[in-house]
Image (cartoon, rainbow, N blue to C red; front, top):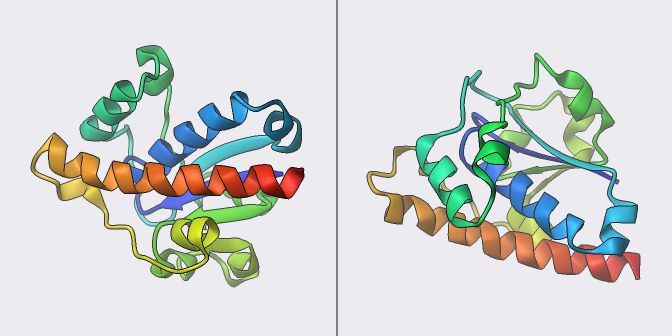
Length: 157
């Protein structure tokens, strides 16, 4: 299985979810055997580097500085192959689905839908004034990732 996580710019939400998913998958032998890769990308903006607050949030999660700093934002029209190759494309809002080429719609689900079975828009923390405010969204993402990981574990049993 190949999982692609998307958001507007690939500098806040999607890399955070990508890193958390990878970490959980690496910790579980069955998941590691069944999930070939987890990547992330942007569908709206061409960005150059990880958001500073996302970097801090990932470091607070215990990720190594070099690993976090290795993130290079991807953009759909510069790396379309990862979209085409993905088995599932996970976004943060319903709107992001419609920024994809229509041929990819069937692969798309929002993170809340894939985790809980119902849609909840995940706000973009980009303009958060404080790290605490930013981390509220990261906590929401982490909860969805935990639920999705549990569903994946059940699915491969």
